[in-house]
Structures are given as C-alpha cells and as structure tokens.
Image 1 (cartoon, each protein chain N blue to C red):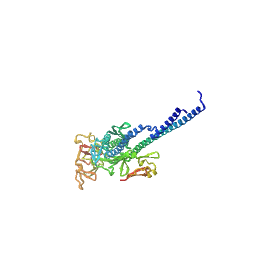
Image 2 (image 1 turned 120 degrees about the vertical axis):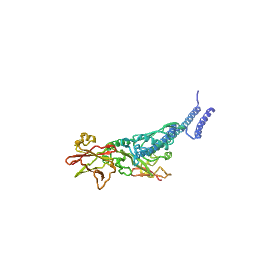
Image 3 (image 1 turned 30 degrees about the vertical axis):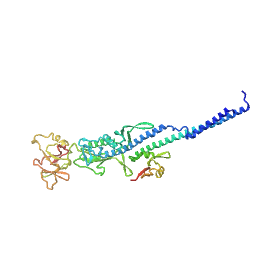
Length: 133
Length: 386
C-alpha cells in the first residue's frame, strides 16, 4: 500500500496526540496515587503517634504512682486523653516535666481548670503537683 | 482524517475527561485506607483499655500494700485490731509468753488484708490470692476480655507493684527476737542484758514516747524496732508526700525459766545475833535461809539438793537449820526490828537471826535461796557465821 504525504502527516499528528494524551493521563494517575499513598502514610503516622502518646501517658502515670503520688480515685481517662507531647516527650502530669522552666511555665497547660498546679521542688530537683484543698 | 479516525480522537479525549471528573467528584484520593488500621484499632481499643484497667489496679494495690504494711508494723505483724494469743502489754502485741511463741503469720495476714481491701476498692475485678516476693506485692486476678470492632482481647487482671518495702523483714525480726529472749530471759539484770545484746535498731519503749516500759515482776518489754533495711513508706499529708521510716511495735516476754540466786548476801555478827542482808528479788514469793556447820562450800554454786548431798543424816553430827521467809512481797520496813523476822528496807531484805544452837567456837555457813511459786533457786553464794 502506498501512502501519500497527507496520510503520513495524519499518522504523525495521531502519534503526537496519543503521546501527549498518554503523558497527561499517566501524570494524572501518578499524582493521584502518590498523593493517596502519602496521605495514607500521614494518617497512619498520626494514628500511631496518638497511640504512642496514650501509651506513654499510661507509663507516665505508672511511674508517677511509683514515685508515691496518690492517683487512686483520679480520672485517669481524662489525664491520658489530655496528655500532650512536649519536645518529643509525653506530658501527662507535673512530674513529667524534667526542666524547671517547663515546670514553672507549664507550656502544656496542665490543670488549667483544676485547683492544682505544678511547682518545682529545688531540693528534690523534681516537678511536683500541688493540689489545693 | 476520515470519519472513523476523528471519532477515535474524541473517544480518547472523553476518557480523559471522564477520569478527571471521577476523581474531582469523588473528592478523595484513590487509596485512603490507613496502613495498619486494624492493628492500631486493636491496640487503642483493646490493649490500651486493658492497660488502663491494670494501671488502676496497680495504683490501688500500691496504696493497699502501703496501708497493710503500716497496719501490720503497728500491730506487731498482726492484722489491725487483732490481739496476739500471747496477749498484749500497753496495747502492744506480745510475740511470746513464757515458753510459748505467738509469732505473726505475715504471709497469711498480708493475703487476707490485701484481698479484703482490694475487694472494697475495686469492685470490677476479683482477686483470689495476694502475696509478696521480696519487695514485690502481687495480687492474682481473673482473666477478662475486651471486645471491640477490632476483635476480642483476653488479658490477665493480676497486678504486681514494687512497694520498695519487703514483708520478709519480719523473718529477720523474728529470729532476732528469739535470740534476744534466749540470751536475756534468765538474766536478772534484764535491761542491762538487752542494752548489750539487742541490735541498735531495736529501741526500748514505745515508738511514740520512747520511754522504757518495764514492769519488774512481769518482765514484759515493749520495743519499737526501726526497719533494719531502712524501708520507708509513703503517706499523704495534705498535699505533701511524706516518707516515714517503718517502725514495728512489738513486745517480748522475758519470763525466766530459772529462779535467780540471791545477790549480795552479807552477815554481820553482834554478840549472839546475826544481821543477815541480801538484795530483794522482785519476783520472789518466799526466801529460804539455810545454815549449817557442815562444810558445804565446795559444792557452791549449785542447786540445794547437790549442795547438801553429803550432809550426814545423823543430826548429832551436825547443825542444819532452815528458815522460810514466806510472803516475800508483803515485807515492810520498820525502825525497830525483831529477832527472827524479815524486813524489806531500800531494796534489801534484813533478817536478825538468833539461835542458841549456834556456838561461838564453830564456823557456820549461811546460804539463802529465792523461791518463786514452787521453784527454788540455786545456792549462788554463802556467808560465814562467826
């Protein structure tokens, strides 16, 4: 079969069109999949970080009880839920602050609603929870 | 381009538009499932919930353990308000009475007290047994399950906490108490013996007043024993944590198995009278005076039977007399003293002996024994009547 010049040009444009269409199609699909995977990863990490925060909060309360603080009757659920991360460390209660500045300033905002506050014990070099009667 | 080719182009464009519309309309990416979602849900809804419950149990168990440790220490190892089978002195439980020992069964008491307290404070869980191993206090619980959308999680509700205090310290105190009683029970100077032989952390007297509780006739001593291992227990005073050294309140009975021989026997002769003096024994119910011209000095100190074993039976060959001073607890001191009558003055027993059988030219040997109920002491010393 013999092809004339116009036929050849048609085939060439068909090829260019298909290539451009395929480029956009694959770019779109790639972007969509990549975005989805990243989004999924971020959500997974967020879930894990949240679990890690809750799990650390449980450990914090366990060590707080070990130090002698009386947590019997305290709302542990609330303490665990309200725990926050400061500099990679989970803060659940005053003894979790290891620096005097953090203890005094209470950047996490512990007990903003209760008659308790954090106070640095210079003698023991520890942050203590003080509850007013 | 023929007609068929043009249609093909439009189809291609249509497919692209359709895909774009689909994603835009769906408003979310293709893959939205979170990786490890089931695991995360299982950890959060099952494992973490179980951990929270165990944490609550541990907090209560720690407080219960501290309370039980304090109560037992204050009651000589017995449960609160329980009185020792060996009875009490000044409301403090005795660990022994004469030859009987009533040492506390600490394992049993800890088990009972911890279980009772846990039952009242954690209604949701059932504990079958509590005990200790070194400083670890544990309570055996039942198996429970938590069911969530992620599945079922079965866990053990048993809890264990490090109290920083060991109930095993009682074993040390028991052996020290037994040793102290065996060393000092037959020592007349009890307080001196105790001061010399008790460990430094055993204090005479009550923990509150620190005074020496000593009733001479009873020989029951109250002790305040500070923790040999320096264990402290926490208590909450207002908003402060107060760590207090563990102090055990207990009492021991040093009732002697023997009757003590009398001490400081002296005889002063004036004409035909002999003024006999010796130390009072606060436990004595009677005293017995012996005098003889038969030389028994080689057999002293010894029991009465052995001292007089070689005494001739023929009364013509020797003088052998005995005088019983009964009612030793009711002797009085009087200015004018009669012959052959006993008096108690300033902790000394005085007896003015006058006996016509005593000849000036002979030497007589005088001995005194203490009698407590039906038991007579050995003869520890003698004095010469010249």
